[in-house]
Length: 307
Image (cartoon, rainbow, N blue to C red):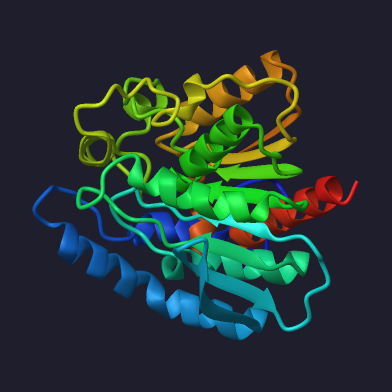
């Protein structure tokens, strides 16, 4: 089995097996005092992959301002899709950036032919909740007058859900389709997978999640749907969802619970659980599973937005 192919028996690719054996995960070990160093180390870790992806996908990037919010615009050389994708990056609302998520956003732009807009929302603890959601909603308000899709990974999945809930309350249009990659949709860390996958997920720990939740939400009620959108008022007016996760994902239970809630309230949900994979495995460009999952997301968006 080569690194470029998935196993015909549904097992992990050799690239994924190598990742797990070498424990080549991004820097972790969050604390209130080490965030500047952790942010810099994570960016340095992913920068070579971003450079590879930009070369291989031939997308163009540029900094733009949308409704007063700095954003990264990602476009294929030839834009073939008239609607944009609003994209939320991950990092627990305390780290991450639009640049660091280009390993997902760039191939997504290339595969769909669409422009991807990534708001550079403010991070906690310098700017705790609701700063990130406020920034994202300012961009959302500009895009929602025409058809669009929304995608978010981890905290970006939280952002995507919170923005849709705000839009519903404000009477604004919802996206035509939504894709969430391992969404951090509940800041309560008591879910089942945050116990049994703590130590099995090579990229995220329950302690990391608890620190991010505290720095982001502070003393606010984490059951507030604007903070933990799994508690929101969903109904059948929401778009079709594709949710991806893995059996090692620390937040696997959140994806399963969210899918159940959306279905119970009349939603159309495709929950894809990848055997042996971890939290937002799509971020690692060396995995053939990543390329296949992003391809699935691209096909899902094209199918539903253009109906």
